Amino acid sequence: MEVIINHQTVVTKPEAPLSEVLRAYGVVHAKGVAVAVNETIIPQSHWNTKLLEPRDRIMVIKAAQGG
Image 1 (spheres, rainbow, N blue to C red):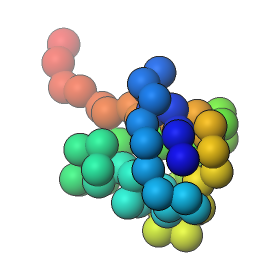
Image 2: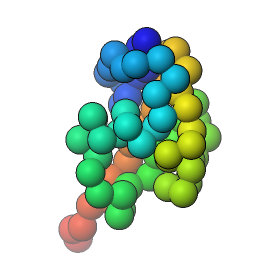
Image 3: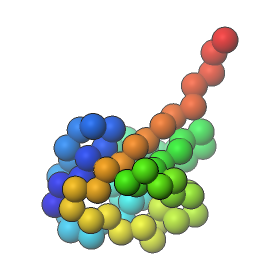
Image 4: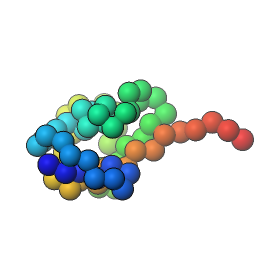
């Protein structure tokens, strides 16, 4: 199935959990990372249980330091 992560189409297995797709995308550490699926924030505690559906839109935002 296809999902969209940060405006890029990614192919994954059907009904994959969000955590699995994030790992494949390169999100290894959850600290400083916010994730939304279809414009709804998904708390890190739900990443393992949130099953994705075809064409879900995932936005991954990583905090950055600077000033």
